[in-house]
Image 1 (cartoon, rainbow, N blue to C red):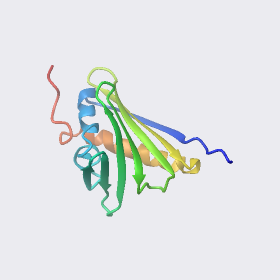
Image 2: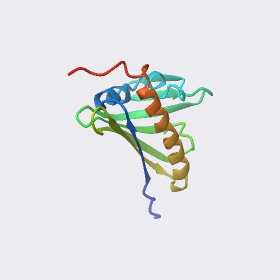
Image 3: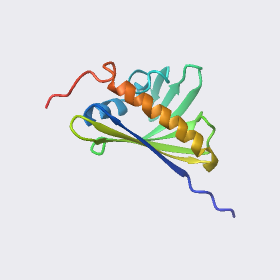
Image 4: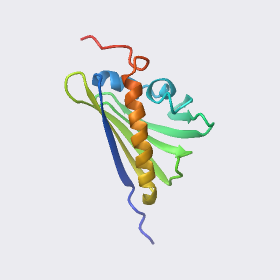
Amino acid sequence: MPRQPEPTAIVVETEIGVHPEQVWDVVRDVGAVHRRLLPTRVAGTRIDGDQRFLTFPDGHVIREVIRSIEEDSRRLAYAVAEGARPPLDHHEAEFQVFPAGEGRSRLVWTARVLPPHRAAEVRTRMEYGIADMRRAIESADAVPGPLTT
């Protein structure tokens, strides 16, 4: 029996000029991707139980399964169940938010994909996506203002 290849891991990250709590508030808001996380790329978001449906401006829909939202570690894990671009046999991913100095954060996006030959294209899409996320999160529309302690 042929051995299945291991998923290829892809990690992209960016530094964001707002507090980790603010970044986490946007990332964990799974039903507002179109308004807060990727407003220039996602036209609509619908939640049905643990499933999230992302509708793109061209009408394409991706169905994701939200696997976990971990408040203490500021980690959101999900899997793409249908509609991946490019087409993939396996796509699971996570976001995690870390402090990066005074009033700054580091957003890390990790994906594991099959088939391995699609990893370069997925990485390119993730690099563009995380740059768009940074811009959206740093905008006044996504983050209402500094948190008070």
